[in-house]
Length: 265
Image (tube, rainbow, N blue to C red; front, top):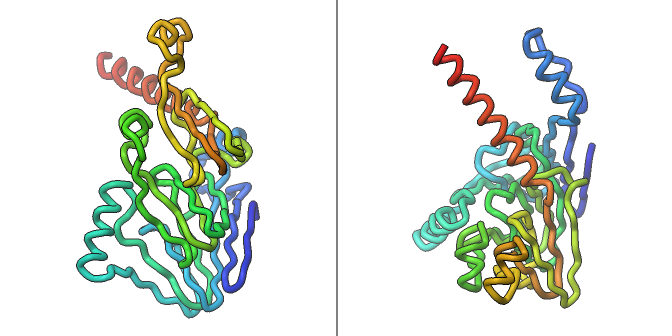
């Protein structure tokens, strides 16, 4: 077990399968060996309910045991319209299933990274696709950018996902927790050259500013626009995220070149 949070009626655990020993095909053994050598491990979210409920992303369920029922609440025509708008704006699913009752729920195994959070009426704004599941007391909403610069140049578009209310939630973060930098700003300003802040308190103001006030300053500094976070609250970032993206792109490029050379031969 990597992490666990428990409160009245609900317990959420992040499980880790350190070693996978079920291969029957020797050709895949090398791939599995390489995964273990670089520290990749299969993870799974387990939820234990005691007369409580949890809302997940569609398709996240692996199996459940016990006296548990599932429903997708639409909320009439108005509710349907709001869900469809949220889906189109934030890329979060329009219809999220809610599991209620007493029993155990296991979500899909993944090589990704998860983090548990407990909200206490302290709303947060997260990047698209990060929300994974939450208690029924947590609301998943749409948050619009407050100014022109963040909407046009922020890298997340005009809308992000806002989580508010009180309860537990699970986020699918872009890097391992050990590579996440967590800052608590106290009426301070943080400037970042890149799009790797994935979570912030809703009280934090987000804008995109030039690195220098004058054009000459921008040219000589070698920097362009900086993502600026200002106020009091939390800011979490994944500074290694761009490195992984570069490695993936490089690998795809190398694979494409090898296929091209093979076809020409």
